[in-house]
Every structure is written in structure tokens, then in C-alpha cells.
Image (tube, rainbow, N blue to C red):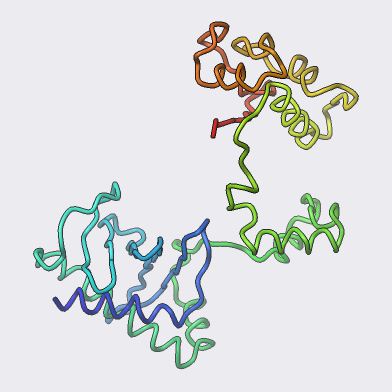
Length: 266
């Protein structure tokens, strides 16, 4: 029970610390030393009301934590299979990690500047990875594509707000209930223009259907032959129920050379 209560306490203490967002999940990465000053990395992912703790780089699986309910061990494939209370050997591995992680959070809470400096000095270089600040990327790669410059200040701020508000995570903003072949080709047209390389020429006077005919590799499985304005024919074609749908094609690779445009029917 010691491991369970200590793990519950760690999950509660995490609420005092900022997290990153991965889709709708909350993510914490805890870098901390144990009693022997060996550094460890716990990746904590919260999905809905359940936490998943992974000891990064250990290969020892993970813990699935439901606060006030229980802690279960998970294998490397992500399947939970037994309660930690019934596995003493597991406790000997995880208890010291959880205890050390909690002690480190207490250190960070008291003086986060000092704690961060210690991580910068002591954390092994071979284990360091993460997200680099945008300013550093711009300084290091001055020729890199600048979306903010193309959009301008006002539209960049608008895009940032949309992302922060989760606009692109909502189905009503990103999914459609039905389509026609012409609708699909229009999306292809947008992709052709947006994905044009410097050395390429894309004739923007063409319709989406004409671009698909010209720039895809021809293995369209009958997509160019169905009624372009019929939602039902396109739905049947998507589901593989249309008599003209032939196997062995590659209809979603809209550009020769491997660029793929995937469509899932909602």
C-alpha cells in the first residue's frame, strides 16, 4: 500500500506545477536525482481522470493511476495487467522512484530557479531532448520558413489564439459529414498550391480536378470517373461499394514522389 499512497500523493502534488498539452492530454516531465545522485526521467500523462507514469529509458513499463481507486502496472505495449499491491517486486522498483520524484518536486517548489540550474548542469547530455524555443531556431536557421512573416502580426496572433482555444481539436471545425469528388479535388488544389516547392511549377489556373489529373500518378481507382457532384457516389466509392472502384490503386497519393493526402469518411 505504500507505493499506492505515495503515487496518489505525487499525482496530487503535480497540480501545483505547470503542464504541457498534447492534444487533450496534460503532460508533465519530471527530471530528478535519486539518493545516489543518478538522474531519472518520469513522463506523466493525464488522460481524462487517469494518469500514466512512464520511467523514460528504463524499459520497465509504466503505471496506470486512478486517484483514490488504484495503481496498476502496465507492460511495454500499454496493457494494464495487475495491481501493484499484489506485486512486491514491482514496489521495490517504483517506490524509490516515486519517493525521489516527490522530494525533487519539494525542492523545485522551494527554489525553482536553483532546481532548474542544477538540472542544466547535472542532467546527462545523452538524455537531453525536448522543444527548442522558437527564437533559438530562428537565430540558428535564418533561412528557415517563417509562417509569422507570411501571415503578418495580426493574422499570426489570430492563429495563436485559435490554437490556444483548441479550435482545431473540435470536430465541428475540422470534419465534414459528407463530400463529393469535386469537394475532394478542391482540397487537393489547396494542397498542391500550399505544398509547391521553389523548383516546381504548379499551374494555379487549373481546377482541383485538373490538377489531380495532371500531378497525381494516375492510380485513382475510378475516382475521376464517378459523378463529381454526387455525395452518394463519393460515399459509396469511399466505402468500396461503388462498382467502378478497383483495387490496387493509390488514390490518396495526390503528388508523385510520396506526398499523400488521406481522407477518412466521417
